[in-house]
Image (cartoon, rainbow, N blue to C red; front, top):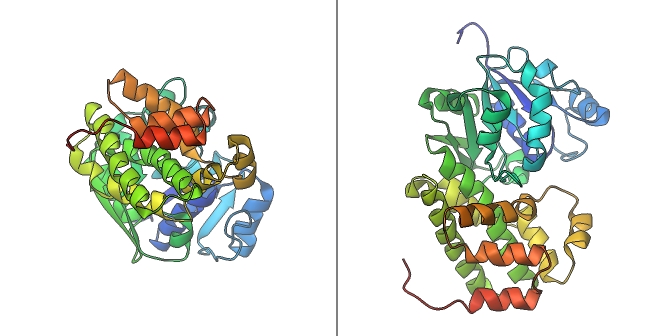
Length: 337
């Protein structure tokens, strides 16, 4: 990489997490262009240095620009940062792939599993674009977008099979308030990020039903156990699940009222249907989409995931709220491993 030019990143697209990572990159001195689907979002970022759709009150760095043309940011980009719903990744990426340059490292922010194929985001990226796995990284950790936009401290894990690529992206997004660590365990990072959304739904449901902090602690702890079982069965390192991309992300997503998945679960726990809750929350809630795919992965690898199983059944209206609470509490007692 030339020392005579700054690092360039394209961020697709301008939702809450994409905007937050774009801000981190710009604050770290990286040249950033964001792709926005709507003219008013791109205009707001370029003219007012604000994202009117998600963070109208927070000023963005003047160096951060936006466009509605997805091909434009990809020209000369060192990094392509993908932040779109996991279920629409394949379709969008097929359109963008011809514009991705040979040296560009693709960074996934997605925390979901594709329905039907049961593939992780990094697997979809390599399949659709044909790039090698060494050029695909994932960013994961306890990262609530609202806090990061406010400049509050956070950390994350950047996982890539190529340690040098991970270190380059680490440099591109390291700021006084955002501390990235590197890893080579892509599987562990992606599964930690995907399964925690389902566990957060369970915690939210418990909260909505009036269950206390003991129930929350139980669900987080046993949720981590089933996440680790699946991840290690698929080749992840157990230490990853005890780190930022595992336990860290799980605690933040299950505990914070800023968490979409926990909030979605809280509405369900208060008696709203999935359709009613979707209408109220309006933002992508990856756990709702991914629960079924995660459960299919668990069955493929012969792994027990009782919390995920109950949440998937509840989301598909196969059981009631009371059935769900009973199923989680009435599992046969056995030694804790």
